[in-house]
Amino acid sequence: MRFFAHHPVIRCLGAHNLPRRLYSTSVFDHPNAAQFLAAAGSTESIPKLYGLPEIVVTGRANCGKSTLLNAVLGRKTLLRTSKKAGRTRELNFYGVGLEPGKLVVVDAPGYGERGRAEWGKIFDHYVQTRKQLRRVYILFNAKNMMNAADTQMLQHLSSFLISDRGQQPFTLQSVITKADTVPPEKVDEVISSMRKQIWEAAPLCLPPVITSAAMSPPFGIDKIRQNIADVCRR
Ligand SMILES: Nc1nc2c(ncn2[C@@H]2O[C@H](COP(=O)(O)OP(=O)(O)OP(=O)(O)O)[C@@H](O)[C@H]2O)c(=O)[nH]1
Ligand SMILES: [Mg+2]
Image (tube, protein in one colour):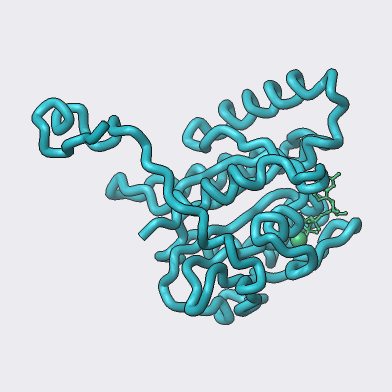
């Protein structure tokens, strides 16, 4: 069936009522093309790059940010991960797709008990000033569920979501990680409760995508790839 955007009924419904077009995830078809571009440990060292669309991950230290990005990029060790919280200490920029790259994913240090104030400062500066930033992914570990630091971060990020002129500089997407750590009989309860807490803290945050990078095959990774491809379309 073909749709005609100029048809009066369609025009009246508005473009957002047209069937959602999914954008190609082919940018992720070349895992070996993914490459480290730069690290920023201070606001001055944040690289300009080339204006390619960008996404960034955030979440409590150890919630699985770097592991999730490795899975999304189809790489095992491009991003360094650790059992110990506080592994990622800078904003790390990775180019995705064949040269000259189609989009950039940014790994960030964690917040919460094992986070540091200076990491928070760089992150805030980055999200508030980065023109090419399309979406912030906020990750929550299903094993630990949510705490006050998570709620605060959701509220904090929400405060950036609508500018004075009513424009939305970027969107906020929640992700639940480590779903494999929840006993099957508790999954429904845990996910429902987390979803409710996310909604209560940040109604503008998109409902969570459920993932597990440890499952074989990894769970939810294709959804995250599609989500990134949709939001980074040009
Ligand atoms: N069971 C399970 N473990 C996971 C999963 N994802 C990550 N992990 C483990 O969780 C630990 C932390 O993972 P990282 O990816 O380093 O977490 P991070 O959020 O980047 O941590 P920081 O950089 O320290 O903030 C590692 O031991 C991972 O192997 C998952 O889906 N399931
Ligand atoms: Mg990390």
